[in-house]
Image 1 (tube, rainbow, N blue to C red):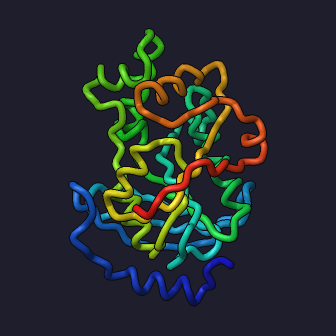
Image 2 (cartoon, one colour):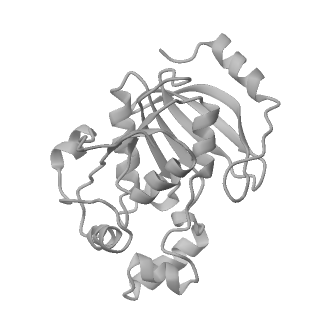
Length: 244
């Protein structure tokens, strides 16, 4: 069941004056400032808006059912991708991963998508477009980021960890192919009890991108096609993990 209005009021009252030392190197402290219903083409959700005390970036949690204080919550941590998520770019698999996650979580009693405002693997929208230009000239995604003076992936997940703490989630089953995401969240003492792969069939425009993620960025992408998963949006649970 979703949060009732009295429960929402209780959460917002509790969070209104939240202040803390922050999490991660930048010591970012977040708090929940709004919760509302979010009916969608993927199912019925609620959305929680998070404010942070450092850079003004606003993040959201898309919630299926009441996740507060729960264990084993199916969770996707998704970084913003304007070109993929909103514009339907075929250069990446971001939109397919987001939609697949929402479809899968809609079938759960409870679940969670944390949508983080760290565009272009953390390098920002304009730099991502610059990187696209370099890729058009023959560089892969990693080499393009490095040519602009960035690491292959500038994202970090202290904010996601703090969001989970604010939601009081006790343990998660994390939907990801990225071992760095598992390591980063675990470093912040998020209890990840299982990794759920999220396999997306490639297209002619993103096949090399996906191969680069696997070869250079360490993403666990074994077998790049699984039409059944794409149609149903269901991750396959192939890897159990001990408590982190």
